[in-house]
Length: 159
Image (tube, rainbow, N blue to C red):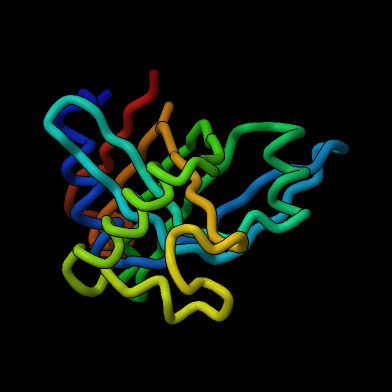
């Protein structure tokens, strides 16, 4: 098993190179639903946190009310894959929403972008804009060379 301090930076590097991931939630009946989202990950040397700038749709709200856990699965055409299984928590307060807005505005491409390009998101105080915080409890990083060539290492960690 890989240590948290080993896998977190490797996860961020791969996730940020892929950018988009499939995020799955489950409803109150335990049925999965997935959508493609764009998390931004922060590793400070001790803690890994993810942030998603997203709309608090009725489906997302209901699913995260039923279960506050999500699965974030990244895949690239070279078969690099990484997964973060996370606790998720909504942030609707102005201070956190502004912090997340600024994270995306100021992050380098391809992870960074101006959230104002999303219709209805004029600024961080827009009612259709919310922040979703991700706190991983399990991480997995697998270079595509492991599957395609039998070379490299799969990194895995869980609380």
